[in-house]
Length: 178
Length: 321
Image (tube, rainbow over the protein chains, first blue to last red):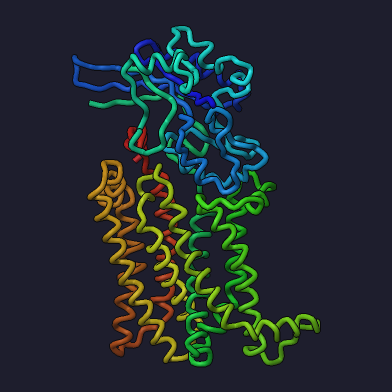
């Protein structure tokens, strides 16, 4: 069994948005939509300010509310725990969109619900997702958490990290290295 | 200071800047589902209590409105789907964890059952009625023998229908304003109350009106109690829930909720019903219509407010309020 996850180094990310463009190109994301996006969070009081840059996307949660609320099983866990939407099962009820605390989903102009797939078509070929492979600062690591020797397992053992709103109880699989 | 910006830009239609996945279709359906649940519940309960002739409007006439109301609700649901031709996929799976799945299956049961229930009363209400085909007459006679069983099934299904319309929303923990178990009972109570309002509108019997006026008063009382508990629960909960409550306690939904839903939809009809019971002459249509409109606005506000409440990116709310 594999359990795919992503680690994004907030110390390395410069917010260049290459990952966003790579995703849109790789996945034919319709114009005006995005499956991933860059957030810049500033905190503190001038002159002691802190800036955190994050590349955000579907968190491929282990306890995904979108999978739970889907009335047709169109949203499901595919191999390695990747959360996928089967377009031919999706009726477009939008329950999953409402259920996602990360607002990672949208209705594709063709009617079905769409979102980040961790580039499962590339992962199956042994490649990295498009966003990871283009990152010019190597801020993103993709891999298998069940493989103790994978780069992501090692980096999560050694670096401090967080997930987004863990209190929503979704067990996200995108980690942010601090 | 905390400041968050999405620097890559993100304007996914239907999601940004504030979630608006559901427009008018869902609240309209939730309202109609509630009305239908209310009508069927009281029709079945008073049938079982042997009041079919005393409370004719409730037991026999009101159910005739159920099939068209339910059809209208289902049409709204269908219009909301963005991948319409695949709607039948609802009926190739049963998903216990998904309230929308039970809703779909409940509707599949309640629609034919309530139609059959209403049909058995047609000949009693219109003695001249002819079903035209012998098989329909036979079916009518056969169904009449099972009214008691149908009534029990309808009570059960009506409660599920009334509750699920609230649970559908409360199951979304991503939307703090919906994420309260009060919504199930609140929508059920509001649905039953709108059901009594329909009976009040069509009943010509004084005794029946008095009974349903009293029922409505009790239901409005429960609703007010549940609304107070809704906000008490939020204010005693986490930051996002407190924030959600503040949308109604000073925030953008304050005026519309407290004046239209609580004032015009609950307190005013309650007051009118109390006065009427004391002997003042007040047309029964006034509280009944207020209750119905209040119930509709309640659904609209709750569906809208839930989509405006969130965990992440609260800066967007501040920008658009």
